[in-house]
Length: 186
Image (cartoon, rainbow, N blue to C red):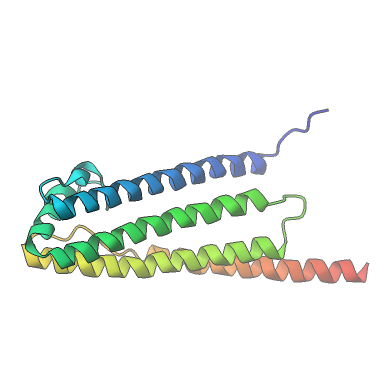
């Protein structure tokens, strides 16, 4: 007899698929930016990632990066490297979510492994938030040197979400402790 999946199991499957899409997408984006970066070191006019929205909708990275490259090569190198690290860290976050979803057991959800994975996700989000400041710094530095408007803005939601996930991870850890105490009393 086939078991009917619960609503929660279906939602977790959908989230898992979305996490895989985000993981692969950010890895591809990082790879494209890295390859384009290497090409533009030798041939500046070949800003291949001019149509890739690095920061979000409404930006024109091709012109922006070309201008940065032409005005200050060192700034351009640091700037693009931080963007690559930023996108790779987001890919790593998606990977952590995939690993978390693969270990969740809805019959017995409280385990120390799950709690630790949740806390690690909060650390990764905090790192992304901190790295956003570095990208923001290079963006402002570049924008000032070429006279264009900045393309990147640090959002404070990362820190709030990281804190929230950290609290949830610690709640899971406390759930494991209670679960183990209950096992001992039986």
